[in-house]
Image (cartoon, rainbow, N blue to C red; front, top):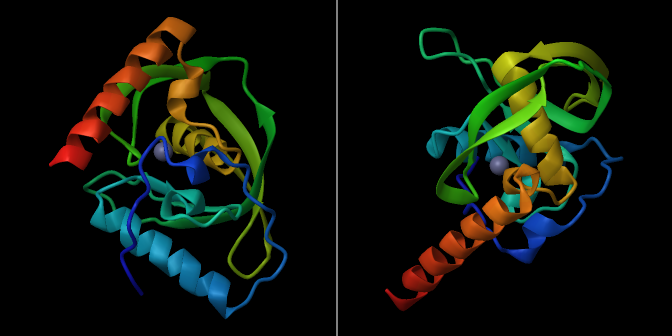
Length: 172
Ligand SMILES: [Zn+2]
């Protein structure tokens, strides 16, 4: 398929809640392929549809390590059924907020429900990086970014840094 342009914060499409997917057709298969191509091209571990300007509840992720086979999941209409009380913390980044990584705490283990590209219901349990990635991408579908998990002062600092770098890019 095709590598798409990744929208950057503070693009308004990144801040919208995405719509549920009800039609599982060829267009959806093509969208999932675009997401996969764009994610691998950008060296990411996850990418959500709003990041390429499509506000639908679909994301892709591949958290396999470098010495493992590729293991790409297409996740549609995701829900978290259960989240562990135990938290894990990880230095997160985002393809839509380049150059910024911050330590974020999230539930370590999650039980999830979603549909695959054929509309078939999938149940899974994720932990560690897969769990973090799933939660990060699900946030995108709700118009939320990882910096929204930061304390208010820290968030303002990060936002200012982003604004400065986007202004600089516009001037170039
Ligand atoms: Zn992201």
